[in-house]
Image 1 (cartoon, one colour):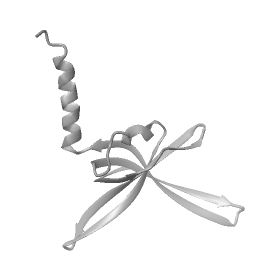
Image 2 (cartoon, helix red, strand yellow; image 1 turned 30 degrees about the horizontal axis):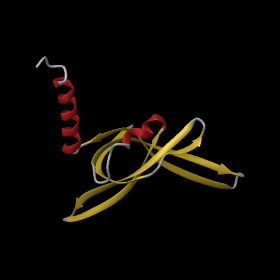
Image 3 (cartoon, helix red, strand yellow; image 1 turned 90 degrees about the horizontal axis):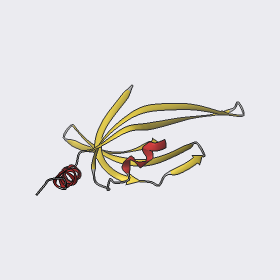
Length: 119
């Protein structure tokens, strides 16, 4: 099952190379919800893995994002006596909702089209 959430890019971290086959990059989304006439702000940490680590390269702090993710939980047992549980929010898609980013993309594509005009 997948989920989606909208918020502001609050912080992004460097890519970590865990081993030769696995890398991850974490970022924090600031998500605000109004409940009972009060604003509640959550800071939610997500992770990108593999080739998806590059999805936030061009994004700036404060950009509005729509994040599509899966929830993954793991159980880790050490020495049959210590058990730890881990929860990851694995992102599989990001969309920037900022008009500035959309306009920049549109301007770039228009320039490319105009380069091919005969006049």
